[in-house]
Length: 254
Image (cartoon, rainbow, N blue to C red; front, side, top):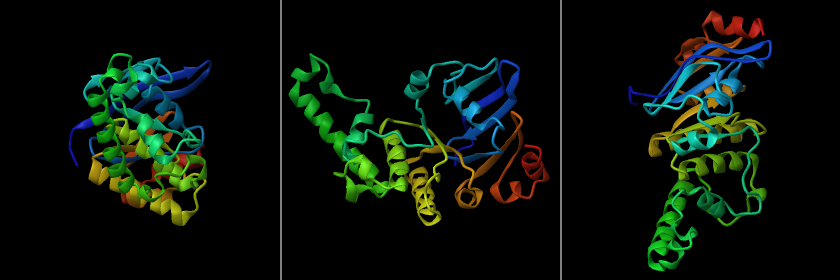
């Protein structure tokens, strides 16, 4: 794991009318890390992710990604620099196959323009390379056996992995995943986390996960951040953080 910071949010504040949703929140995820963001409902987790990915502009504070100031950039711009988000409810193209869903995420479609479409030799090679990359990713997330299956036929766990695969295909450096274990039974949830960890190790993808089912996520993460009332109140290694009294207090005061 690298010691360099990939995502850094410092002093981030966000209010909605009289509600202070984020209060000088700070988070620092290193390159190659699998980080977990936890906290009771209403603690500010989703708002922090929304600010980081450009859904909301912060009232104050700064967000840096891969050394670049992305504070207030819209979502399509944060996506462009390699910061990709998935949601609790997967949003694939349901009528497209697994293969097609990953191909759509590829940014290098040279055959899409009027002029480039005429250069058949060039874009055919690009398409061949893209399909080769797709199958390498599908092998990593264990979906290579269902490459020709429409997305709506996949299980909940497979859909979560498809989302991760699309992020990697898009060139993501970091994936922010909201509730990757939501709606998945415990046995399959462990498989999801195992495959995400494999993506982290073999593809070098950095993760920030929001997850309520701590017993499922803890064995697979490097660092845990705890939110309460809009602040990061504790951070540390998984085994240590669960013993921290501030974690219990965060859930008690929620």
